[in-house]
Image 1: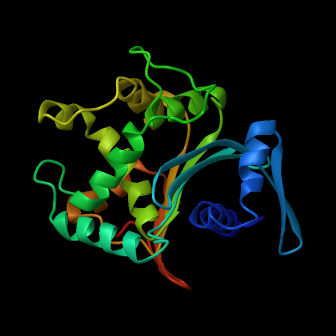
Image 2: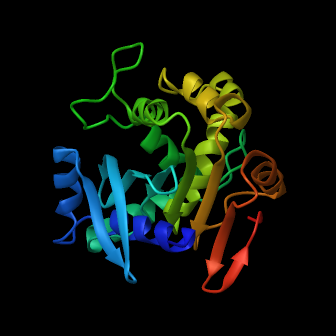
Length: 245
């Protein structure tokens, strides 16, 4: 199955978690069974590792694709469920429309990325960190340890694509950001080690679909150096903006 089609499938799954068919994902997770679906005549099998809900209609799905030996960290886009969601998130976005003075990325996307990293993990079997907490960063770490040879792709549609880009950037900036006063889960230091290609020995790819602008020229440079050459932001159908933000 083509990589882009696989990633779009994952984006669709986490962006429509309220759809009647989607509880199948949770059922597969609970039963520790693979999620199977027919896409364009091709049978696709995904192992559902975690489904993380941080409020509203914002989800992160962690999938493992056996055929390609790839972990897929997938973040939902802005998908309001009504007027209240639209107004609440719209006002929140307007209040964080500036560039963060320390790391130089969108404050709105940085806030969303930090919410994912710090959110309590709802999985009762989650591994705790050194402080005995079960946040999403610890969840990310446990999955990466479970599949030590798997490559990693972070992806998402719209806001989710921005979050998928900002999370590895925040990890790379962790020493600087922690010194500036930002609070991180205890697992982030080890998570950075695993994320780093030279230490973790895995290819890290970021692919965003219709993602908003992340930051300035320094983000473009970091994106090209830190992520694999397959990384890109797909702006419009048939138009690919590679290593450009």
